[in-house]
Amino acid sequence: MSLNLTAQDSLRLTFKLEGFKAKDQLSIEYSEGRFSLPSEKEELTIVRKLENPEPMAIIYKSRLRSFWIDNNDITVTISKSGFKNGIDVQGSPAEDLWQQIVKAPKEKRAELLAENINTKMAQSYLARSSDRLLPEDQERLLAMSNSKTKDLAKYDLLMAYDMSNRLKEGDPMMDFIASTIDDQQTSTKDLRGKFILLDFAGTNCGWCWVEYPEMSKTLVNYKNLQTFTFNLDFRHSQWQKIATQRNIELPWPVLWKAENKQEIIDRYGINVLPTYYLISPDGTILDRWQAGKVEKLIRKLEQHKVN
Image (cartoon, rainbow, N blue to C red; front, side, top):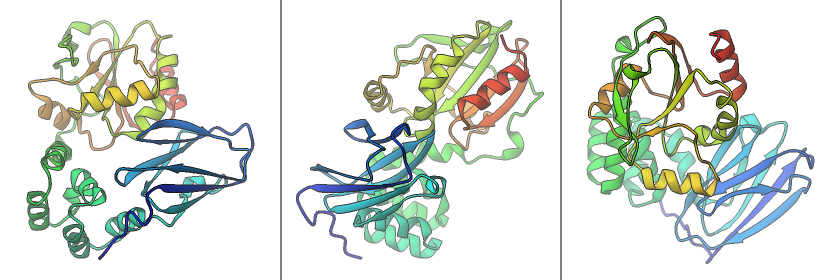
């Protein structure tokens, strides 16, 4: 399969908006940062020069839709009423390849990945979804991949574990010692007497970034609650870059280091990001949930009488 990812020397990206009003908050995010779209307009075009194909996200009402962009004429149609079901992208060979990869049967998917192994799309898939391939294809394709992809795949594969071992509501929490990037250490055992909210997250977790601003505003009101973000990856520099671009500064510790990091991930059963655990003052797991808007978080805190 031959792709022309640079049919021209720049990206010309046209957005067609259907049903939005001026009050609707619609934004895009890619390598240059996050930007609001004037939602009262029916059509607008941006022109950029890209070094390589890259993903772009469109965010509306805490929902996120992503697609690949490259140096071509691309049209993205966004319908307000149909946003939850996806968006329509035309003119992006990078997005076309991505869709072929994710929709193909396992055997055909492996062929596509091998044929396009040096593309950003193939490397991105192998970094985060190689466990969806046949074992022999997974091993072969990762051997062909760059070192960054291999490292990301390694830590994503930590999520594959025996579900029967996962901690559940009513169990004592698994205490651990972890530290921030500048070695500020936290021991959960030392926090008995307070509620604990564990936010298991990752640098590339789009939903995590969407929710952080409202979470930050909300959680400062709960004086008997200690929150931690526990990042599953090790990409602190990229995480900090995104946080700076979004003007996000979390008012709680962000944990990156732990000697038994794999064991923590396994025991808490993290296979979707974000995953939250609410822990009682005596160290008992009260609740576990995945993703969701900040309103869901507030309901959980009220349900368990967190103050």
